Every structure is written in C-alpha cells, then in structure tokens.
Image (cartoon, rainbow, N blue to C red; front, side, top):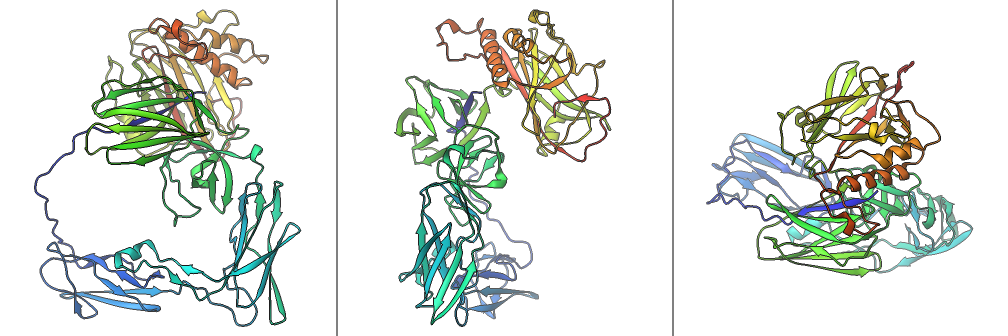
Length: 609
C-alpha cells in the first residue's frame, strides 16, 4: 500500500496582537506550584515558585521575598543534604514544604561488595551484532572487578575521571558545572557477532583476598538484523527521544502510523532504526513485516486555507526529523531513497524555494526557504493513500452503528470538501472528541452509507481485525458480472449488512480494529474479478479473511486509477504510478477498540472486527 506523508505546514496564518499586555493579578490564596511537599532532588539549590495576593508581604523562614506586581514569586534557596524545611507565610496563611536533597553518589557497602543498584545493565537490553555491550559497577578501590557472559569474561577497569552532571534546572541557579565524583566506577565492554539470548551477566569483585559474586538485574540479547521486529507508532504523536529514558532530549515527534525496525531495547524503551528511542507502549508490532524502506519521486504543494500543504508520496510511512531555523526548516525522511526529478510548487505565499538532496544513502532532506521573517509553524501526519476524507470531493457519509445490546451511533465520517446537499450532523464530532471508541465483544453492528453526490457510487468494505487479518465484505457478487453490482444512486442510503442478511457481531480477541469504506464513481471491475477468482467461495453479505490481500489492494488501486481516467490524462502517467483524482473516489475510515468478554455467538455471522 502506498502512503502520502502530508506535511500540513508552514503557516502563514494571522498572529493576533492583543495590544498592551494585560497584567494577571493573583487573587488566590498563598500557594506554591513547585516543589510539592516531600519533593526529592540531588540539586544543591531549588526554586520556590508560587503566588499570593499582591498586597502584603510573603516570608520564607521569616525572611521577606521579592515578588512581581502581580504577586508571583520564584526565589532560590540552597539545600543541605537531607531534609530541608521551608515555612511560607502570608498574613494569617502558612505553608510548610519539606524538600530532601539526596547524595548523587551511591553509598559503598562496608567490606567487600558492590554499591546497591550500581550494576549496569540494570534492565533487559538488546543490541545489534558487533555493537558494544557495556557493563559498569561501583565498588571500593582498589578492587578487581570482572563480568562473565556467554562464556566470555570481561575485565571492568576503574575510571579515574568520573564526574556527576547537574540537572538541567541547575542552569537557572548558575550551578550547572560538573562535579567530580569520589566514587570509583568500574567499566568494560564486549561485542558479540552471533544473534541470540546471552543470558544474565555475572559480576565478580575481589578485594583484600575476599571475593563476592552477584548476578546482574538485566538479561542481554543480540538482535538478528535480517529478522528485526518492525513496529508501528500507535500514539497520535509518538514521543521520540535521544536515549532510553525521559531524561534524554525529545526529538521530532513521530506521526501515528510511522513504521521502523527495532535495532535495540533497554527495558521498556525501543531504539528505532533511524536512531531515536520510543516507549514500547506507544507502538505495536507488525507481524511478518519487511524492513521499512521507501522510494520518493515527485512532490506537490498547494494552498489549503491559510496553510501550505506539501504531499510526499511514499511506499511506507518512515521516520522523520525536522530542523527549524529562523527563515527555513529542513525535513529529513529516513530509510528513503530519492528518485525525484519533479517538484510542483506554485507561487506560494510562504515558501520561496524548496531544495532537496540525498543527504545519506538512506536519508533524503528537503529544505524549505521562507519568503520573509514571520511567525510560522508546521504539522506532520501520515495519510494512507486510500484514506482521503479530508481531500475528496465525492460527497459520501458513513456511520458505524450498534444495533444490540443497545442501539446507538458510534462514529460518523464524511468527506469534508464535497458540495453538500444534505444537512450535516454534530453527533459524530461530539463522540469522536472522546477518542477511540470501545466496542464490546458480541455487539451487533452495521455500517450505513449515504451518497449525497451527483453521481452513482460503488463501494467496497474492507479492514483489519484485532488479530491483524485482512477482511473484506462480499456484496452480491457473480463471477462474471462486475457491472451487475448496483451502485448507490444519488440521494440514497444503504446499510451493510442489509436488513435481510445475518447479524454481524464484534469478534474477539481484544485489540484495535479498523474498517475502510472505499467509494468510487466507477465499478471495482478488477477487484471483483480478483475476488471471484479466489479458490474459497464466500456467500454474499458475509465477511471473510482475505487470502490474497496484496492482489486485492493492487486491484483496488487499479480500479481507482481507472475511475480517474475521465478526469485526469492517465495515458501520460507511467505504468508503475497510480493517478487518483479526488473527485472520483473517497475512503471513510473507522478505528475502534475491541474489549470485553466473548459472548455466545450462536449462528450469527462474522462482522468486521
């Protein structure tokens, strides 16, 4: 399936100027928003950030503090090791905060032993073949320390120049200098060529003739690159970081749908093939997926309202990074190879020039040079090629409804740029604002499709169940008469399944399911033929697992390409490119969560879920 990376961006929108800045006066009682009572830190100083009514005096431990004219305050105080108590007073109000400063250096045990919690890796980790796998431990000097793993013994050597870095907030108190650590850290690395589970490292320490051994807290494994797991970002905006914890810097957020192979693991964090780290909980594995790689050819830009929209047609939704400048920004697509020779860019109100280069064998970089210094922003999203309800001008609307156990509307989708000939509804907007809906296993569902365009509309219903199986709905299909599929006439509606058909029930197991209604002004001739040629025959009005999903997807794209032939000069389009006109087709998509316990399904038929 092809993808379009739609960068709805470079805003030329109006910046509203409110004139003189309004002073926000504090009318609430004495309060401190940071730190909370019981806060712990390793920093040597801390800010007390809060507010009180502007009239009167605020004291901390009996000393008055400076405040803004609005009553806000943020004084800084030194911290001693251990508990520090701050008593704030304003008139008859009093707040007591206790802040504990802890020593960043671990405490060495008495006698022979490792410092508690100092063995690294502290969690399960995975690395690529021949990538350094490093170990460290804190122990008294002068000890002899080693680690054994996978029939290898690695000496861990003392590091004489160990330092502790202060937290980022230390820059606000002018104390962001590294501090020498009095603790001796022992470190060493190894590399393993063969993939596999290496097991748990065994640490050994010898001091003054005494030897202790201790198992590490994490297992170590080596990933086979050719069989690396491929994951897809499921969060609306996946938080990518420069390392495996929230202490590391944020990178460009990854749009939902981004795919990448996993090249490393550290606890709950995954290292993606382009170098960024992301929490595993923000992704899902794609079974049997090939390593994500894509070509990119032509690029097209156009104005949508107050935005400039640039579409990058891709084969796979790959990771991306953005570098912002004052009058330019650069978009880098990873795992991408350019075959670009055409960029369509009209006299855009914001972009003066768009440059591109193959920055590395697997990176393509696009640099947008802006016309003038102005406030601007960008948004990134991935849109599947067969998902275009935001751009299609074919007037269709569809709803997902529950019929039992309680009848109600779940989701409603429609094309937003079509000329409307029927009243709109706000119901779906209100429901969708709450996020992805949840359907219980055993719920009876149906889809309702409305055609409010001026043309007959043909449609297909397909999707993915919670197991990742590709499904398709079989209409009243005859092996030889694709044209016999009656279109939905202008102004008419149809339910799927039809009222006389068997019930559709939401199927287990729990997970995320998605359904797509693909609509076209022309019949799906090639798609019907591919379905008719399947060795397993499925009765009409039923849903079945697709045995040949790639063939069906290619046939759908071919049929949509043909449907656009009356509107586009497709004879001039290369044979390996699909030209799709937004006036000729539309796809309405439904994504929902399946949850609950399976109920007795009886004789009911399978639904798309």
